[in-house]
Image 1 (cartoon, rainbow, N blue to C red):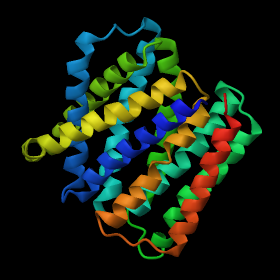
Image 2: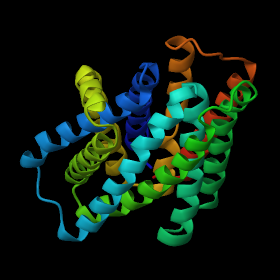
Image 3: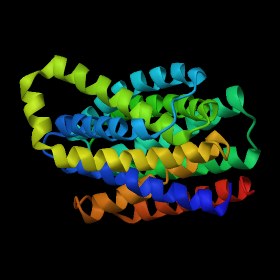
Length: 279
């Protein structure tokens, strides 16, 4: 993994943590998550006419990812309904790179031992970031654990889809459009007019989240065409560092000595992954 790709992934991580903080800050987290899905759909539909058509072989991956995105946004809203950003986010994003790295190593492409070790250290640090908060509240943990599996699954699906497509920007636009539209229609069917009104009230938040989400995931998929999927997934989940900082500074969540130690583990994991995937 080149230094340019590594730094781009850190920027993507900051963007991803940013839109999650917007959702968590809102009083109706479920509505704000759907608003971000709607914003993603808008970004996708605006970009699609200016991009190359997706490769036919990538269409099954786009459809599969769109379905997974529906579940992802649902679980994001459920997790943040009562769980803190600095607790829920590390669990959601912490387990995902471990699962993705193992799945990638066994079923997609071989991974160097250093990458697996680095992903393990990184995941341990990420998960431990939420350990201190678990003693205070278990709210949202179940949804966060389930979403980690969803995230790992669509990471593998999208990594392969982006490679087959050969056009990461096109692929990203289509999955954001497909997943966003499917999510909004499904949730409107469940909640009806009240949710539609809530989404309209959050149009700015949704569009901002959609732009941030497109940029963050577009960078990640681009990186997956140049570096091992497991390594990209691991570095991308450094977003927990940004999420923890936002939780402490913006949302006034607790940040104690344990979290400083956990942050050190995350940084160590990132260094191992970077050194193990140098090239």
